[in-house]
Image (tube, rainbow, N blue to C red; front, side, top):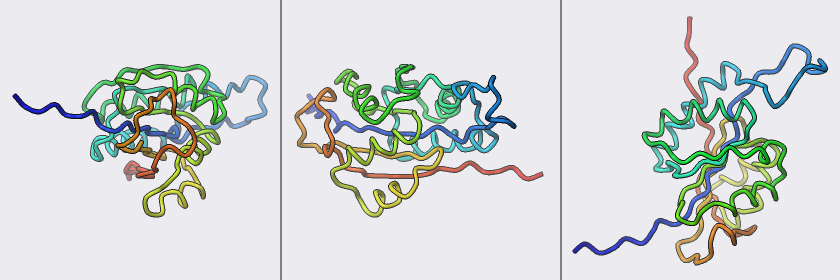
Length: 189
């Protein structure tokens, strides 16, 4: 009989949606920010984010996604690159959330889910990562504080010794292990 493996340490991956398009006139009274689609660059970069997740062993088993069109489109382009299909939760509260709201959304996730992917918006994604990261590897925190670009990914690991649950996640509990900004290849011609 093989020895049982302890569950992997929980990880939270925070993804800012890919680059979105802007209308010609953002002051247009019919402009609906919630329905803003991805721009061409966003459609190229989102699959690169999915490939980065797979290549770095960060495939989520649960995704929390804003209901905004640009986050949904980002997810639709990330998914085929993962090699698996995680559980997906569209959370309308994530769209205009502040970092405490994002933290609360994570706290509500089931414990058996060990790798969560949160797809959301600035400034809350950047603020959430800064608040949760008690430590960071290398220059990841410096780069993240300077800018959290579209398609940026922050990987937060909870220490192996942690015995608390997602529900107890608090500022300073995590280690920022990676911060990456995957980019797609622009087609010439």
